Length: 160
Image (cartoon, rainbow, N blue to C red):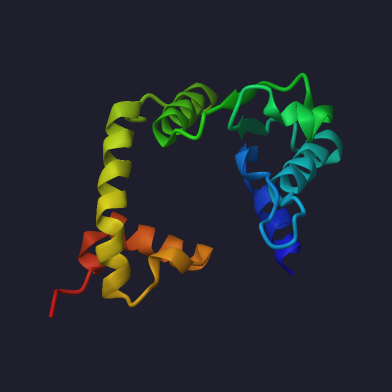
């Protein structure tokens, strides 16, 4: 069951990032998609009631600073970050949060990460083509595979 897998992942992770920015109406059903708020709720519940979760760290995103208050106002008081639908802003915020939360000094700066992300986005279509994947219909598993290929260049087969 998909939800059980998500619960297991939440339980295994010390850090959680929840992006609520895609909480919007579905075009066909006109109903909201609430998967991310549901996952955030599970994560917050684990932290409140589960043993060993008191050290868990969260980063919660939304598109605009106070937009969440219109559809999930009960999380008010949390430090909700906003990225204004700008991937570079999101990358910088995640990088800074990880640097603070982990205490690691070897995390590259946001400009370096943004540059790598731009390179990945440019190379993504070619990698998808090599594996006969439709870039517009990538499943999460396919995206993870493609990202793994990009991170490990030796996996890319030679052009025929």
